[in-house]
Every structure is written in C-alpha cells, then in structure tokens.
Image 1 (cartoon, rainbow, N blue to C red):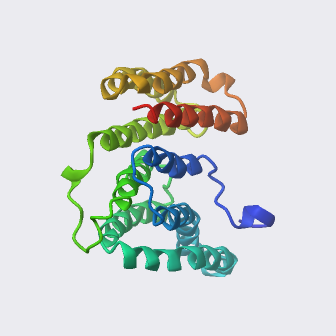
Image 2: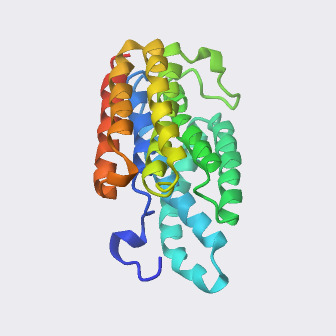
Amino acid sequence: MSGASGVGRWLPPQHGAWAFLIVPLLLGLSTADPAWVMVPFAVAWVAAYPLSYFVLQWTRAPQRRRPRYLAPLRLWAAVVTPLAVLLLLVRPWLVWAGLAWAASFAVNAAFARRNDERNLGNDLVQVFQSASALPVFWLLGQETYTGISPPPAADIPADVWVLTAACVLAFTGSVLHVKSLIRERRDPRWMWASRVYAVAVVPVAWWLSPWLTVPFAFLAIRAWAITPDRAPKPAVLGAVEAVGSLLLVAFGWLV
C-alpha cells in the first residue's frame, strides 16, 4: 500500500472478489422471504471482506509498516462490529455461522503468513466461504429461527442448495480461468485445467437445473476463447467475468 491514496487506500485491490460476495446474496433473494435483518447482514457481509483483507495485511506486515493499515482497519471494523452485534441479538444462531467463518479465516491467515495467498487451496476456501452466504441468507428470512440452536440444514429447500452449488462451481471456474491468464499464464496445465473444468461442469449445471446451462455454457466458451497468449487487459477480463456473474444471477432466479 505504499503511496496509496484515495479510494485505493481503503479498498482491497482484488476487484473480482466483490462478485464472490454479491452474487450469493442476489441469488439468495430469489428464494428467501424478505426480512429487514437481511439488510444489516448484507452490509456486514460485504464490509467484512475489506476488514479481513486489512487484518491480514496488518498481521503479516513488518512492525514499521503496520501503522499504514490502521485507518482502513478502524473504518471497516466500525462498520462491521455494530452490525455483527445487532445480528447476534436478533439471530443468535448466527454465532455458529460466525465460528465456521472464523475457522475458515484462520486457514486464510495461515496461507497469508506463508505469503501464499494465491495458493489454489486458499482460493477454494474462499469460494466456499462466499457460497455459504446463500443458505445463511435464506435462513435469515425465516422467523422461526430466532434462537441460539443452529437451524437444521435439512430444513433448507433444495433450490437453495442448487444455487449454492452453482456458486461453488462458477467461482471455482473463475479462479482457474483467471489464474491461467495472469499468475499461471506461463504454465499451460492451468489453461487446460480451466478449459476441461469449464466444459465438464456444463452437464452438471444442466442436472442441477436446465436454466443454469446458459451461464455455464457462456463460461465454457470464454474459457476456450480467451487464451494466455492473447489475454486482454485485467479490466476486460473482469468485465467478461462480470457478464458471467450477471448471467448466473439472471438464470439462477429462474431455478
């Protein structure tokens, strides 16, 4: 963050991660009963990402560099903390979701301490973190779940699990695709892994719901059409991934 100023000082540089946060919430709206508690959860959920990012940056930075991360840390902590308290007061069972997310964050922190955040294992942990917001979002709309006991997973309807699985499949494909074009562009094995994966999940998407075939077919086409030797600029890559996310949301609402 040396020399960072303006918005860049307060936000993580991984712009693609925002889709991983927002898509599960948008898909969750297609299945969940509306409830006011979803609003503070959505804000806390999105704000928790920059908070966790700056926590990791602060913990791994040399002592002399840590002060530069304190301002964004305080900002995002000031957003997340009161909302988290409110959510735990009205939905105490969220403590179990919080513990699960804290455990997965500990995995992220372990990779960060080794300066290995881009490890595929770490990316997949983040994929499951993101997708897990969808069933939690559905549960928030159920007024019957207001105690401390964790709601039974069996109570969550099948369409919620279908959309959760779709998020996992799409986000995993995005991780492989972007890696093959940027950090691992010199290793053709990543390109082929991305391509084979993208094609293989199309019939899985059809099995989950025929509507999901459309976004996953688009993702398969983009995996084959964009190659490391002719990869566009990151902004263009991000735009293509955004189109895939929008298609997933649009057709996910039809599931």
